[in-house]
Amino acid sequence: AIACSRRCTGRARAAELIRTITGVQGVASTSIDNAWCMLAIAAEPNAGDLREPVARTLAVAQIVPRELAPVRRSLEAVFVERATGGAS
Picture 1 (cartoon, rainbow, N blue to C red):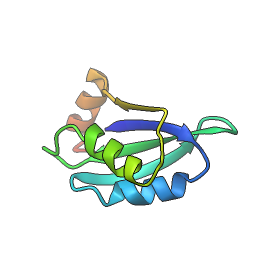
Picture 2 (spheres, helix red, strand yellow):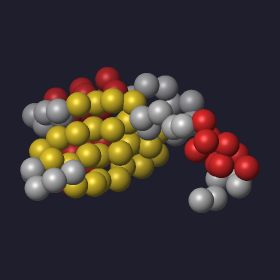
Picture 3 (tube, rainbow, N blue to C red):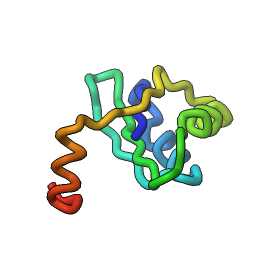
């Protein structure tokens, strides 16, 4: 998963563009405060690092993210996912 932080203006457009990238499974948007939001990008299994394709796609649309960072799951989260078959 990747976290993409950016100003909230245009986040729907950014999410729409990111969804078109090969290897992207889904995009969820969360407001951080009144000015900033985070787009959580879920990758398909074996998709690899999608930060560069995300950056290129947004750059072409003149959308500038503040940060693109991988999201690491904790060992506990991985264990719970495996133990429950992916159910939360």
